[in-house]
Image 1 (cartoon, helix red, strand yellow):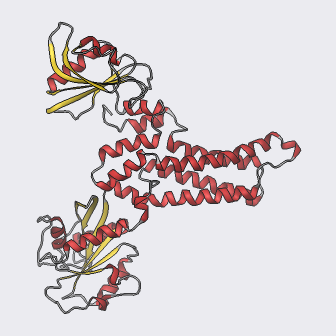
Image 2 (image 1 turned 135 degrees about the horizontal axis):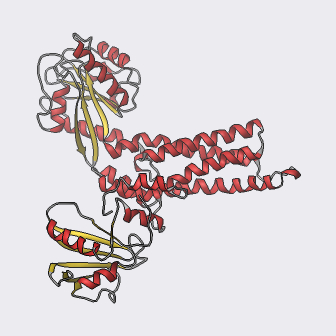
Image 3 (image 1 turned 180 degrees about the vertical axis):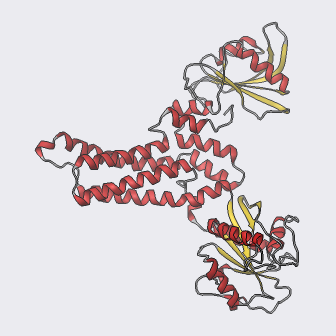
Length: 462
């Protein structure tokens, strides 16, 4: 993407296709003037900012293209901080195309993907984290992912990063000053205070890195594996959760040979449920592959629902299974299924050390939908109980995560360097590298390639 900052751009900001209305957006120094030439209903060049005007758009031969509403946002009080015009016309693809082509013929340029938001960033309206949050907000499919994007748009994460950089910059400047007086062998930066600052900074960075695991899945859907022995009722449970017959249910053990994945929104949080092959000694090559994939999914999951057939599986069998699959998830739910067939079963007989306990054990009958709603509540609570879900500094972006990991490695080198007594120029270099990676997150340090990589993923018109 070639970065232009002085020309005027145009694009359709609503989805392609037939609709009630289409919104065409222009931004740049000629936006108001060029639209005013073809708009009949008000003098746009004299109109106040943040006003809406009704009129007709006419082409060069005075043909009426459409009746529309035009909204004016004068610089700097606009999304891009430039003059912005939004034309709300009828959603006919023909009308939209004719209006856009009219202004392209006047020398206006078609916007590239994400160019409106890029201009907002380049003009200081948003930092890079906030700009990326715009794309996340557009793509959000649940309340949780929406809330995370909103918090990042408001700058919570950016403030955390800026605070870390400001403190490091203060010390870096003192060390740089030492280098200017290297012959006098003076020390302006107290190394003990520097160690304390870097240690505190590392703790924050590591917390942000840890938050990525949950933040990323909140955005994309929390992977939740339904595991258990053959015929435990895993597929029946998936169908009960989804309230539809999605998975094949059979009395024949080993019916599910591969994973079945479905999404479910529970009170605003998106979960990706994964029904897996039954865990047992495989009887054929295909089933063996299915069991292997089950183990892989369990290892990559955020939440595991382990389904137990209380009519067939003893507590000892369950404990053995837990040891074999090595579930160490803090988010493990043990579902004692088919309780309608064994109503006198005591859940406490299945409790096992700190792994299976009253807090994560539920009695149910998936077939009769007994306790399914309660299970959904427990699934939701197991995620929302983590206070980091409400943290404005939660990391959800892989680019931010990678930069934080690199910054943390640089801070490690700073501490190691101070501990081993290396010279100030090497300490300063490692601090500069840490500052660089933190600055890349918010865009205080950026390259054209980085901006192109980020904004090319945006939709045209945003």
